[in-house]
Image 1: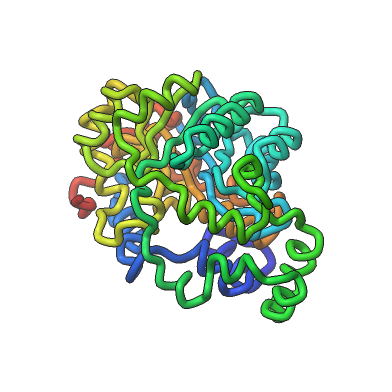
Image 2: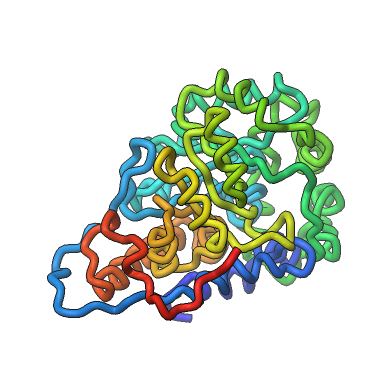
Length: 387
């Protein structure tokens, strides 16, 4: 392949480069992966009106979310374990986002720590929080994120139980993988020498950088064991007040699919709603995010910022989500495919590709700014996703 032209091209390159266990971890979803597939398929079913003879000689793809100006309505989503896909992948992605003029969001269970990402960048990043049973650990992580200048907090709310992911079970993803020595890892992944050299030999330290204060010995195995037993299943709306008291910036609830939950979240202090089904990795009977988006935007869109993730694979997908009520979208798999395939340059190329796709789509629907994109650009005869 001379040049990746789309996210699907980066996916194909990533599949050839990553060990199967890691590619399946990123690429897969829960159970039979029906919700994972619906995220993509339902977006494709949304048609757009082509318009002609409009002056589209100047097109502005930028937008503003929580005071951050974005070159396009795209945010790189938090991805746990991301640093196993390429050497210090979270740093590479954060630098790429900075160069492209958008925002990167760092996961609680990233390989690179909050401080490492901050040291490598000059613009603020967002932080994603998993609520854990030990509030002292949570507060320490929030304090570190704020000290590093993180501006916006994404609170994951759809992890009352970890989704059953068949691919991960079949591949032995988890403590079994994390417990491998470097020699045994190299033996198991011998067909992927590029990954062994980049990540296995040059990518250290391979541990969960943000969990260092919670672990007696910070290793992949210890981090996985800790996180598998420490997520708080009792986490509820009342706990948002505690987070709010420990976080000064905007707080966004990540993982909302129901309008009633969105309304209650706003009533309990949330500044934004991220319509998300965890990339199809949690409840495999859940609706696609694009199906849930219009109802949530109608319920709370005039009072808060509504974002969406799940299935975003192109600038045209961004257009569809904006038309149905999103202010901007997050995408996780696309940047991971890109960083696994071609490092930081690959992520920059992926973002640029999406921006060019968005610009082309806007020209062909007769819109010159992101703010103009609304339901009027949708084809009335197109079959819309129904959640």
